Image 1 (cartoon, rainbow, N blue to C red):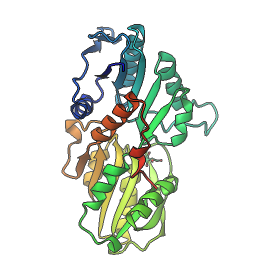
Image 2: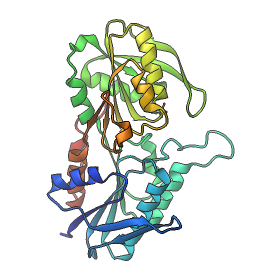
Image 3: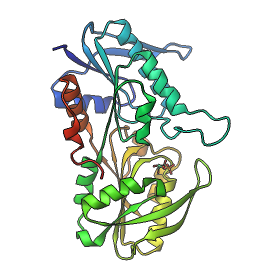
Length: 318
Ligand code: R5P
């Protein structure tokens, strides 16, 4: 069996180290940096000829830097004769630009998928893609994992009787996900009617289903970016009498004024996973981090041994 080696870009070394700890493997030696003119640099500092390589790099902010660093890491491995290169992209940036919904705009998620494939990735391991169809943008196998098991554990740790809990979908696009969680948790479902005015502003018009009065509302989302969607929904739920509001999301992008909005919101706790690192400016008593390192480590182990990873979807959404 070819030797397994794991390397990390600079986007989330803490997650890469945690994954290596679970696998009892050292993190591979790589030098990454920039030339004075801003060009990226990469040198794999170990012999990787004929090895099974996993490159860990979420393409979170700074998105373009992290994507480019991943591309040159792939190129370095390819040119150093790695046997197989699996890109582990726990958070796939540009995922929301996945369709042409007006004239003269790009489908950037597809362009990024092309770049990764053309650079030489043989496989992709990712988590909670914004839309699962993005798997089809890659012409190599994609394993799209679910963070659902760790999100369930968080929700089940909230001290509330199941009949006092209601799952709320923060928008119509998330109904399928929310329905899956509601079924799994044995809770009722309500849906917030969210209208997006532009990239940063949303309006929450109506609540479909309910009632939420006196209930503990739990919202699930794939990502929290500016926080507009989730805070708008929480404000609506509070106005309708929800007793407490919890949010569980896979990717804590938390850009712009997300942290300030969260502090001023009626949300009790926002749980996010460690697909994206929480930089010191994002640490908040309202944020709880859950680790997906064990899930990703198990997936890496199974991919390396050519074993099925379906078992890891056992507690997936829906
Ligand atoms: C929407 O389709 C997504 O699932 C998220 O709800 C949304 O993109 C989060 O963005 P923001 O936090 O900026 O509202």
